[in-house]
Structure formats: C-alpha cells, structure tokens
Length: 302
Image 1 (cartoon, helix red, strand yellow):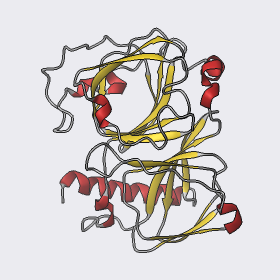
Image 2: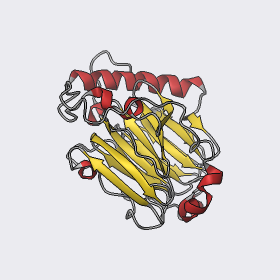
Image 3: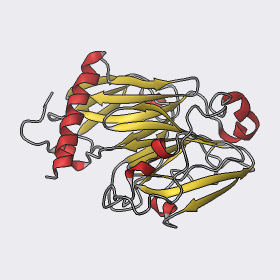
C-alpha cells in the first residue's frame, strides 16, 4: 500500500476518534458564519443518532464508506428529501466525491465493522441563488472589501521551478492561498484539508496561481451569476478538463451545486464586468479513498 495513503488513513482514524469523542456527537462544526457552516461528521462503529440538518447541504468525502444501515426517524418526512447525482473528479480517481442534499431529518446510522463513517458538509443557512447579483454588496461587504494580504504576482516566473507532484508538475509556490491570497480566504485548515472562500472583485485580475490538490467546489449562486463577464488565462489550456460533472448544469439556476476536481494548473481569472465571483473550494491535501476500508497494521481502530 502507498506510504502516503497509509499515513493518511492512520491520521484520519485518529482524527475521527478525537472529533467523535470530544463532544460525544457525530458532528463537529469546523467553521461557521452567517452564510454557511462547515461540519465534520464521524459515525462510529455501532449505532449512532445523527441530528436533523435543517439546511440544504453539499456533502463531500475523500474516504470510502463502511457498510451502513441508515434509518430515518420519521419515515414520512424522509420521503420529501432529495439528493443529487454524485460528482467525482475528471479522471479515474473516484475521490473526493460530492453531492447535494436537501434538508434532512434525524437518522439512526448503524456502522458495521471496526471503522467509522467519515465525511464533511457545507450547510447553507442562506441560498444566494438568483438574488446574488442584486445583493452581493450587502451579503459580502467585508469579503469584497480591500484584501487583507497581497503579494507580488508570480506570473510565469516559476514555470521552470521544481514540480510538486506527477499530477501537478508546477512549483508549489503557485499554490492558491500563497500565490493569490487577495482572493483566496482560508476559513478553516488542518493537516488534511482546507476550506477556502473565493471572492474575486469586479475589475480584478487574479494573481497567477494553481491548485495542487484534489478539491470540491461548492456554489450557491456566485460562481457564474447573471451578467457575469469573466475570462480565464490558463497556462495548461486544460483547467476545466479537471472538473467532474456538475450536480446540476452550470447554467441552471438550481442551488446549491457542487463538482469535484483534479489538481488544477496555474491560471488567473479576470472579472471584466458584472457581479464579482464568489464560491467555496475545499482542498484535500490527502486522499484516503478505498484504503480507508483496510488500514495498515498498527493503525488506530478507535
């Protein structure tokens, strides 16, 4: 088994144990503001009671599920719940995956075997939707204010730099949060992932940057709003080939929506006119995948 995968699996198991036991709850809120909350969910082996989620959500995961039995507490209410297709990256790697779900009721989740179920959610307290072009100034007054950190634009100066990985053969200094912090706002990060709020102002040209990690996009109206006039300069000419399926068509006003992505080559977006661009992106620094089902000897079993 790949050493990086083994270490990621062990780290995930340790994290699951800590997050589940710390508050004696399957849910741990990692970030929250007036718009969203970012939640880590850990259902331990045995019977778990998952609370109702009163918001529409993007559900995302980099680990295979163990065998589960999920039973709604109110079966009649569960009949109105909806779930989108599952989006996977634009290559043969099945992780990370994402899907969209409506508000859901409380459930009993029975996890069979020694490993927990582990995933994340972005819960939307408010859906911007088609109201985004008219209301972004009110909703994101601080986000679209002057950037808190600006660094020199690297441009194409590092194209001869040391490749970070086989899948992302670019200098790691092009990493989005380092190369373009003026538009990539880190809302949560740990050793495994980071939640980034992307906010590109009208008239702004992003600094050249890329995304060396697999990721999930989450959008509730600001990625491509009505009236948008955006352009993208892409060093590889293939950035959008990295995207998996959208959970609903990009131009369809159905929100929230999500899609998974492979590592994305250096690029920069220009907001030529219309509303600014706004969405969330979760970078998975490690992908556990199917290896989660068969951890290495000595890995924590909770």
